[in-house]
Image (cartoon, rainbow, N blue to C red; front, side, top):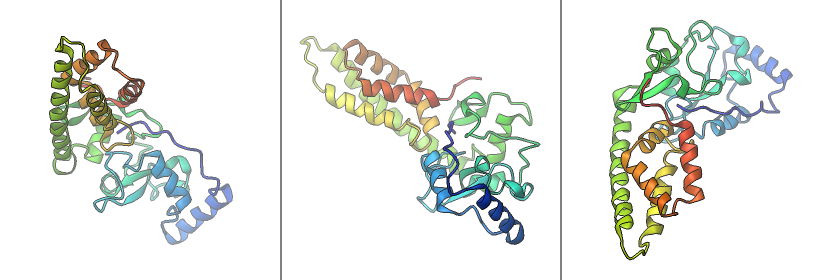
Length: 254
């Protein structure tokens, strides 16, 4: 989960329209929020991902649902309140269910910075405050962010694949560093590969907070970065990608 920057309220969602949609929902319980001018900017806000578990929406039958942070069944007046709408996958939306977030709040990634509440340990998302009912723990438990089949196993798989990539690029960087003739063979390949690796830790990537943490805390990555900097091969693009990943990286301890 990463911090999301909510865009301005859609111009089509005027106070008059909002009032009409609230009335329609109360009378019919129709999905009045299913408007392109609502769903499109929500998806853009989350980089086409579920705002909670960071799975990509629109692939493998993962349809986008509009989550009402404050439950629409309890607070129908907020059914199309812009600040109350979040893009979610069906599973997270179902897990959250009718939770009353006024009484028991979970993380709202458009308001809260998830890294202030969560950290990563052994492929699992953990709450920094493990007190029962704390915002972090309630978020993890209610949304089942450590569901083995749906989320943990995919994390393990992509982390394993990334470890191989980081080991390989590190070996190439070490070989480059040990050359005595001063020739920088494979420098472009090393740089381009590292760019591709860091792109997997950007906000638009699936499981980006997890990937940013895995990559930026990896010893091979850190040493590769230091070698490139020592050789004056650390580019502005690499620096920009690294800094962006650092913004969403989770801590690995409380």
